[in-house]
Length: 398
Image 1 (cartoon, rainbow, N blue to C red):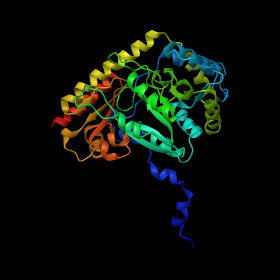
Image 2 (cartoon, rainbow, N blue to C red):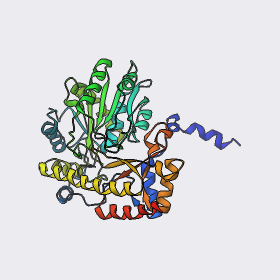
Image 3 (cartoon, one colour):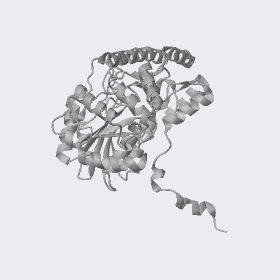
Image 4 (cartoon, rainbow, N blue to C red):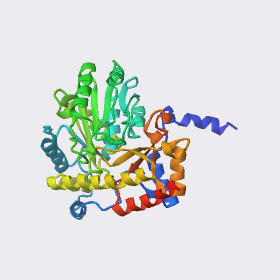
C-alpha cells in the first residue's frame, strides 16, 4: 500500500508554504475562547449608522436580491466617482474605471492577480497589513520590503529611508503597495513622501496600488492625499477603498478598485471569476452611504480621536510605549518594559491571563524578529469596552 502521507504532499500548492493563516483573525478566536476584550481585530463593537442599515433593509424589501452587474451596481459606481471628485479632485469614469468587489481585500488580490506575473517584484512598506505579503505570493510575484521606522518618542512620525526605497526599485518591479492612512502604524503619508514615491514610479515604470480604506479617519490636522491625484499618477494608480471602516460595516464586504480603463478591464476579468460580484442590496446601501453629508465624516474622525486619546493613557499607565497614530484606528506599542521574550508569548499571556486580546507585532513583518517588541491594539470600540480593557490591563502593573 502506498504511503498516503508521501502522496498527499503533491496536493498542495508551493505558494501556501510561504504564509500562515491570519494572525489577526486568530486573535479574535482566542478572545472568544478566553472571554477576553477584543482589541485585536479592527471591527467596531457599536452599531452602524441607522440610515445605512435602513437603506440595506429597503433594498432587500424592494427585491434587490439577485446578481448586480458583475463589476458593480450603477448607483454605487456613480457614487464612488462623484465622491472621488469631491474629496480628491479625481475625475473617474464610473462605466470604465471602477470595479466593485467583495471588500477591499478582494479588490487587492484581484488587482495583483490581474497585473503580476511570475518574476515580478512588488514593493511593500513594513510593518504592513498582513494580507499584502500573501497576496503578492498568490499572484506569483515576490514581495520586497521597505522598513517604516518608529519614532524615538511616542508623538513622532514613522519614517523610511529614501535610499532603501530607491534600492527596492529595479527593472523587475511591477508595483508598489501603499496603505495610507496606514494599518498598523497609523502613519499618514505626506505630500512630500508621496511625490518621492511618484517620482520612482515614473522613473521605473511602476504601478502604484493604494489602499485608502481609512481615508476619513484622520487626527491632529493631517490630510489624506490620494496618489492618483498627483501629476502623472492617475494613469498608473489603482485606488482601493470600501465601506468597511468608514461606515462601520466590516461584515458587508463591499469595496472597489478604481483604475485606468486598460487595468480595470484586467481587474474585472479576475474579479468576475473570483467572486462574480459583491452583495447586491448592500451595494445600494453603499450608494446611499456615500451621499452622507460632510458632517458625518467630521464626527467620525472626532469620535475615533476621542477613543484614541482614551486608550493610549491607559496603555502608558501600565508600561506600554505608544506610537500615537495620525490616522486609522490602531495604536502600535513597544512592550520592552514587560520582560517577555517575544510578542507572541506576550499576547498569549495577555489574552489568557489578563483578558485582553491584541495582535503580535511580528505578524506585520516578513522577518518576525523585527516586530518581536511590538503589539498592536485596535480602539474602534465602545468607551465602556475600552474602560474594561484598561481595567484588566491594570493587572499588568502587579
